[in-house]
Image 1 (cartoon, rainbow over the protein chains, first blue to last red):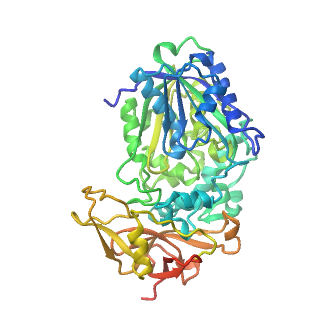
Image 2 (cartoon, helix red, strand yellow; image 1 turned 180 degrees about the vertical axis):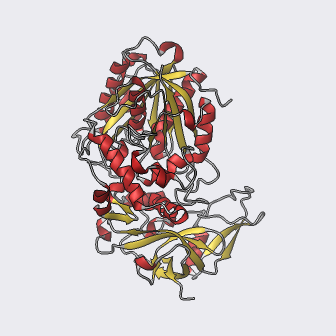
Image 3 (cartoon, chains in turn brown, yellow; image 1 turned 120 degrees about the vertical axis):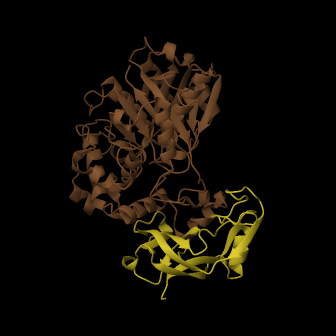
Length: 384
Length: 136
């Protein structure tokens, strides 16, 4: 029943802390603030929340969170996988729980001291050693950080399709332009293609301006049952479709048949079926942009252009907020903040409320998606 | 090979591979029932779900599928070892593995570049497979 989640639930509350390089607070404190703000935005009390969804990478003690946030009426909890696809996956889980009747109002959150605490861009040997089997086939050769794994996709895309570093730069320039309009964004100084081309090499072909930033901060999103969605402080953003899954190969990020094709091709198929729409109905897209090539790869996976045509597609401002297919109008992981993809869902909601700082004229249907690897997830939201 | 990185930690599923390395062999797990080869080593054939594994010895010949030239050291132990190449290597046996490409300048690497297996000794004494640009 692919339409099983269609319009069963809506996003009614969004909350964010300040984004910074050093929050000076615990991840628990950040989570509490974001959750309270999301409830205030929805116009509800935290007492009304009966469901909680967290990321698999979350380091907060869940008992501490429920205790300190006073979430005393929980009936259901879950964790999502995998990593950065969690931003959409938490919404999929919330919608599924509500459709199943096990929860009515669910809060999803992500809190990170990812810049001042444990940085994903640095190699944590202790973590690698503890990982045993899988990491043993990557780490000894210096495949240690996400850029070393996801960069292989960029390399292969260039080999198979002739995609260029300047095309990655087109993505960087557009995302920074969006961030320059967004007062929440950490990186607001506009850049040019030449700035991108002269930024230092991190793992060639990827340069500094191909990589997302590292941030401290938290986000929360409140999802509620259809019959409770109206009458709050803001218009609901309806969950038209939601999907999570994987295809044939799940043996790690780089161990797959083709590194030019991400796992999200399966999620793309499923989320469009779930929502009953196709790429032609989408007015804006929020893409998990841990590295700029993944905007290009995702545009292909989600059917906005053919495989291999993503490079030319992003040229000429096509993915700017005033272009043909606006992408990451908040600035994304690249320039706003890296809170593991949850800000992308929040920005999709803002577009539908008409409150984005880079508002897309007439935005009625927005896709939020990720093309990481292994498990992937996506949601399609629509205006009330 | 890179210095200062942790030695691989074998587990019960991967021990036969690391034992092979000690004997100078790169062993690829092949399903004893359907013949499918898989990487990295794991407990079950993902095609037919048999748990019977035959370990076959690689010829050691492969080619570059994708590669990166790492310039930014993500850990201080790498500071004087960058740039280094980390690549995905297609072995003749049909599996794709991670390795460095040594014996040539990073700028000489192209997709499909032939490489040969070599074994290197980790500081901890373990034998680690790696790859060199082939002169064939």
